[in-house]
Amino acid sequence: MNTAVNVNVVHESEAQRQHARVRIPAKLRYLGSNRETLEVKVDDLSAGGLSFHAKHPLRVGEVLRGRLQFTVDKLGLAMDIEFQVRSFDTSNGRTGVQFQNLEPRDIATLRHIITSHLSGELITIGDVLSTLQRDNFTKARKQKDAGAGMSALGRLRAVTFSLGVFVVGVAAFGFIAKSVYGVYFVSHAQAGVVSVPTTNVTMPRDGTVQSLVEDAGHVVKGAPLASFSTSMLDMLKGHLDDQQLEPSKVEELFGKQMSGTLTSPCDCVVARQLVDDGQYASKGQVIFQLIPRTANPTIEARFSYRQFDDVKPGTQVNFQIAGDDEWRTGEIVSSTSLNSEDLSSDIRVQIKPQGALPAELVGRPVAVDSDSGPSLDWLIDKAVARGL
Image (tube, rainbow, N blue to C red; front, side, top):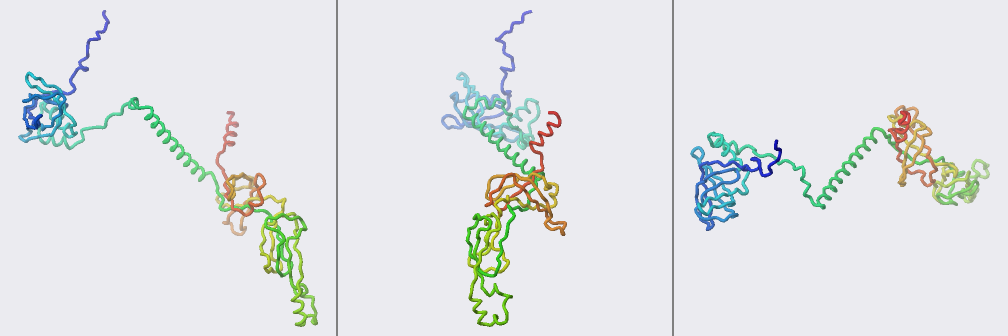
């Protein structure tokens, strides 16, 4: 058996016509080379072009304009067309032309007329109008190798654009995930402040004050903080008899001043001076607030009762002090109610920072977060427990 393949054989589907030609009664009026109007009978017609016998020679490749006319239901149907001469037989004038830039409506009309003629159906105006009213075209299929002809710059742009879209999508997903995590797993304090135990120095007598130290200054125990002046009359009040209470004696005692000194009760830092120099202060009024140098600042924060399970003693929290970009960690050491008589009041917690805080941060507001969601350590513990 001979299995040789004849390479000269061509399958009929490779050589068949692109469009079927039919003989339909039609006329073509077109403008000749000298701008004269010529009318010829159409020999055959297809969806891609037509043929006719030209009365004057035409050049191959020449583009002409004309009007194709049909008779349907005793009514004239005409369409303006543009065509290019593809062949011209000088012996008999037979000319083959190809349509150029046909509108979708014209293409649909031609196909309907040709299809109806081939099937033997009667062409009516109603069918033509119905064809024109509907959408007879679909979108072109995407080419699988559409990017095969792209240049290096075009490929770089496409990759860059795709990468940008991917990065934006990842960023959006991360932002949404972080927001959802913050809503369901993170408890935020309503308020917070850096606090430290303070020692108050009060005025022993009514009089005026003159400070001897600066704010944030360091003083040792027993060192002078300020001097005060008070009248002799105030010092002796309650110790004078009737003879000493005569107007002249009182005026004399009132004009006399006695000075004294306020001393530091500890090795401290001057946190605040509540009475300005030269101002009058009454007995028992707080003049200075001192911070012991050995005291470590803590964080006091306020949470709502809905966060009761998240602010128990021993819970690890994160906090950030105003004016400081660093997030610090700490541990809740105590949890109390602001008002024991009001069961609906908030919860006040005291947080011990991991590491000492500078004394100048005392009094600044603090943002406190309690994270109760799964962490990396939690995932590792789970994996170890399962033997992974």
